Structures are given as structure tokens and as C-alpha cells.
Length: 144
Image (cartoon, one colour):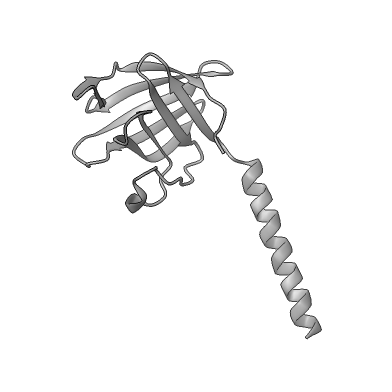
């Protein structure tokens, strides 16, 4: 009985310490572009987050979309090379994909650039709005 209790305490302490480590190493960002009214949420470590309204896809590194619509470009993978993060993205229908980069230009500013593949299009007033190849995003406070 005593061995079981000690083993249980060791297991619980290991679980709580790994959970604390994960909180400290959280590398997620929430970015906003006011001109096009779009958000980009991403965990640059590649850990998963659930895309709102798209639970079927499971945990993904992040997504890009309008604030007033639930059509998203999903981030499938994130690879870091120096200061630049390479993103593999696909629209939520799976019909278009692209490669993009994102890097931190200043403390609160990130530059997102589409490199290869399709052009990002998002719905705007019942029409498709093409986004420019490069977008400047501002950091937003993380929503809890």
C-alpha cells in the first residue's frame, strides 16, 4: 500500500512538472491585420490547437481567417529555420494549398509572405477577396 502511494505521488509530480514546462515553452501567437480584418493564430512549435468549428480536423498548428467568417486556411505544419518560420497551408475544403513564411519584424509586428502555391482568397461580402502576397500583422493579446 505504501509503495503504491509513493508511486502515485511520483507520477503526479512528474505530470504536473511536464504541464508547467509546456506552459513556459508556449510559443503561440495571435496576430491581426486591420486592413483586411483577418487573424492568424499559430503555435510556432507546431503543437496543435483546435480550429473553431473545424473539430473534425483535430489539433493543427494554427489557422488564418476572417474575424466574421468560419472559412479558414489551415496551417498543417511549421518548420523553423533561423528567424523564419515556414508554413504549409491548405484551405478548409482541401482544394488549394500554399507555402508561406512568417517572421517577427519587431516586438509586435510580423511579416507574412505567400511563397508557392495558390493565392489566399477569403470571403468578403459574398465575393472572394484575394489577399496580397505580403501582409503585415500586429500582435494581439492572447484570448483565454
